[in-house]
Every structure is written in C-alpha cells, then in structure tokens.
Image 1 (tube, rainbow, N blue to C red):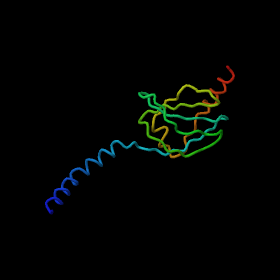
Image 2: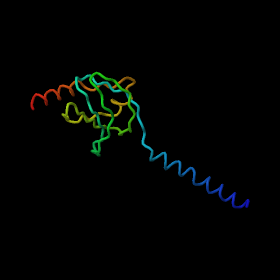
Image 3: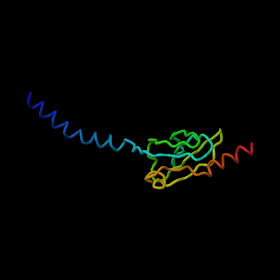
Length: 123
C-alpha cells in the first residue's frame, strides 16, 4: 500500500505544476478601470481588438456618470465602440497604456457625444 501512496504522490507532484501552468496561461487578465461619460447621452461601451472584431461589453453609462468596471484585458491595442441614442459612432483605437494604467479615471472623449449629435441631426 505504501508503494501505491508513493506512486500517487509522485504523479501528483509531477502533474500539479503543469496543470497550474495551463490554468494560469488560459486565464484572461482582468483589468479594473474607472470610466467617465461626459456626454449628454447614455453610452454603451464595447471593446475589441484590431485583429478580432468580437466585441465585449465593458459597461453602459448614463450621461455624466462615472463607474469602476472590471473587464478582460484586450492587449496592447484596444478598439472601443460607442453607441448612444441608437447611433453607433466610428470605433476609437486606443493604446492600452493610454486607457488602462492612468492612475485616474478614463474620460470618454467629448467628441463621441458630438458625433452622436451630428448623426441625430442627419436623420
């Protein structure tokens, strides 16, 4: 019985580090960020990458609202998609370090609100 226990301990000692490495590699890095919406529109904010158009919901913010959100890190270059009052503006490409590690809230560019206003006027 001692041989079986020793064998099991040996297998566990060999397999456990490999399993932990696989889990750590496949677990996406989650970022925490505060975002400020200075526009007069409720905004739906999604993120993707330049190489993968799959959009992930980041948050929905009311006009003037600020919110701390957690979301999966999209890598060095992010593509932010904004939709307000049913209008989607052209995506905004942002470098990760200009968006994530600011040490202060990320303020959505006021121009996003201006673009939505222009789209509404051109109905």
